[in-house]
Image (cartoon, rainbow, N blue to C red; front, side, top):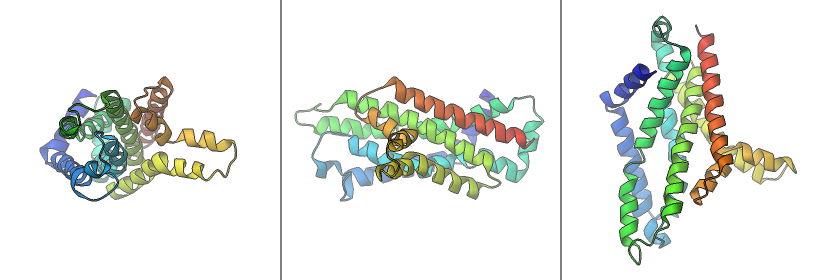
Length: 242
C-alpha cells in the first residue's frame, strides 16, 4: 500500500499536475474571498471569519477531487497497466487504499495556502485576533473529512469507468448529488417524515456541524461509514476486472 501511495504521489507532483491544481485552487479562492464582488468576499461581509471560505471550498472540491481521482483506476485500465498491477504481489485492498490516500493527501494540501487567509483575517480583526478559532479549526477538520469522503466517491467512480473522462463526469455527478442534490431534494418536503432521513443521507448536514465548531461523533461516524462503503465497493469492482 505504501509503495502504491508513493507511486501515486510521484505521479501527481512529478508531472506538475498537483502543483497546478493547488495553485489554481488557491487563486480562485483568493479572488472570491478578497477581490470579486460576491457573498463570499470577506471585506464586503465585514466579519473576521473564514466561514465564507468553508462555504465556497466544497463546491470547488466537487470538481477538483474527481479530477485527481479520475486517473486512479480508469487510466490504469485505459493504458492496460491494471493487468500488470494484478500480476504483482499485492492485495486489491492495498491498491485501493494506496490510491485513496494519495488523492486525500493532495486534496488536503489544497487547504494549506488558506492558512495565509487565516493569518490575514486574524490580523485584520478589530481588535486583532477577534476570530472564533474553535469554529475555524472545527471547520478545517470538517473539510479534511469531507475531502476524504469526496476522494472515496472519486475512487469509486474511477473503478466503475472505462476511461478518465467518464470517471471525471461520474465523480462530479456523484459528489454533487451527495453534497447538494440530496439536501436540495429534501428541502422540497415532498416525502413527509422521510425528508429528515433523506437529508441526513447527504454530506451537507453532517458537514454543517463542523462549520459551527461542533464535532459530533455521529457526524464523524457517518463520514467514516461513507468512506468505508466507497472503498469496499471500489475494491469489489476492481476485483471483478481481474
